[in-house]
Length: 164
Image (cartoon, rainbow, N blue to C red; front, side, top):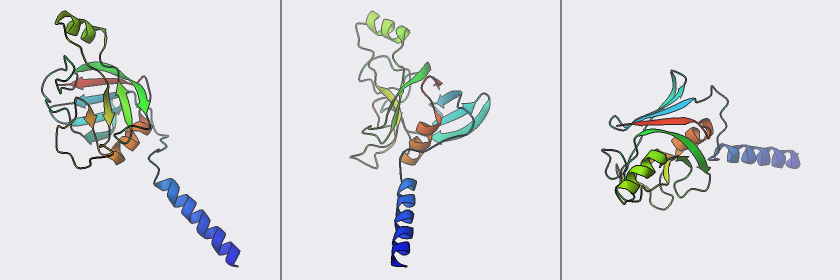
């Protein structure tokens, strides 16, 4: 009898530990496009023209305007793709955005500047929780529990349009 109770308890513990994983499983409709409206601070995960999910977010410390160079604190504007994933991010989880594209690099080069890079959709910093609004260096930051679902839903190659 004790052995059965122990086994039952062990199964419950194992089952509950799976619930706390940052890696979620999503089997719903494919996310075909991500749309970010910087001014409204709303991000939409779309299946064609249907909104599957929407999220509020924080931006870079200079949220208005298109990113043009490293260190300007701006989030790029335009259409890019999700091009990489980081399961070991310093910001819980992160999805890479393909900034800079060829046009961004050419415009920066014409001004003698570095366009910057490493723009992501990510969670909160692992070491410093509770940062205020518009604290990133140009990324899009959501809550940790939200990036867990975004990370599960959005695949590499998904287009992302970032509007002013």
